[in-house]
Amino acid sequence: MSNPFKKILHHHEVPEVLKDKVLNDINMIRLTIDVADLFLVKYPNTVGDIITSNTLKKEKNN
Image 1 (spheres, rainbow, N blue to C red):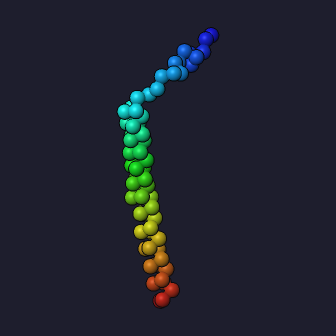
Image 2: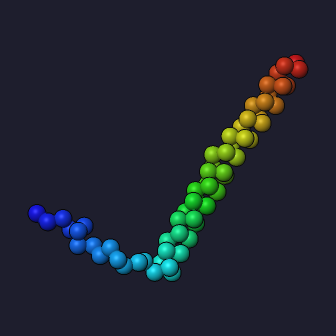
Image 3: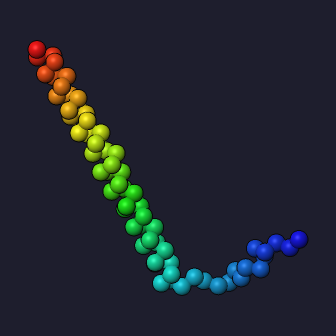
């Protein structure tokens, strides 16, 4: 059985336009993941921590 990867031409370069599009898509995916993480994970955790700490302070003062 022959290896199909040996048939790939090694001397051809990918066009810069295609490279730029792929890198832009990857950066957009990373940005989307970061924004989702910020609003869906970190922000609720922060709000929860603030509420919990305020509740604990009120309980200590009573």
